[in-house]
Image (cartoon, rainbow, N blue to C red):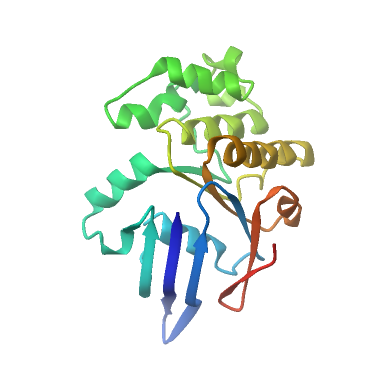
Length: 221
C-alpha cells in the first residue's frame, strides 16, 4: 500500500545541513496496523509528512496504492489524493470549535461536495459519541474529542489512515482504546494504518513495528 524507495530528507540548518532520513526503503502492507516508534526528534513525523505530501523528500520516490505521489507536481493533485485516499489523526484533535461534532465529522465529505450527515452520525455512534453529535468540541473531554477526530478521518472511506502521536494527550485507558480501535479497523475493514508514536505500548496492538534510529527504519515486529 505504501512504499518508499531510497528516500532521503535533508533540512537546511544555516551553514549546516541536517539529515533526518537517509536512503530509507520500506513497504508498509495493505490492511495492516503499523507502528513507527522512536524518540522525539528522530524523524517520525517527517516520515509521515512525506507520505502525506505535506513535505517533499530531498531524493527518492514514494508510492501510495501503486501511484508515485512524489511525481505529483501540483498542490491541487496532492490535495485531491489526500482528500480521497487518506485520513489523518493528530496529537491535537483539530476539531473546528464553531461547528458541532456532527458537522466536524462531516467536514471532509463537505469539502468533496458530498455531505453525508447520516454517515457522519453513524461514525459518531460507532465511537460511542452518537448522543453528543449536537455538542461543540469545547463541551467534550479530551478522549471524546480524539475519538471524534478518528471518526472524521474515516468520513471519506480512506485507503490509508495516518496518525501522528494520536494518544499523546490521553490517559492510559483512553490510549489503549485508540490502539484497540486501530487494530480492529485494520483487521475487520482492511484499513491500512500507519501510526508514529513514542509510546512503546502501542507495539502490543500492532501487526508490524518499526523503530526509527540513526536516520534508518528497523523492523522489530
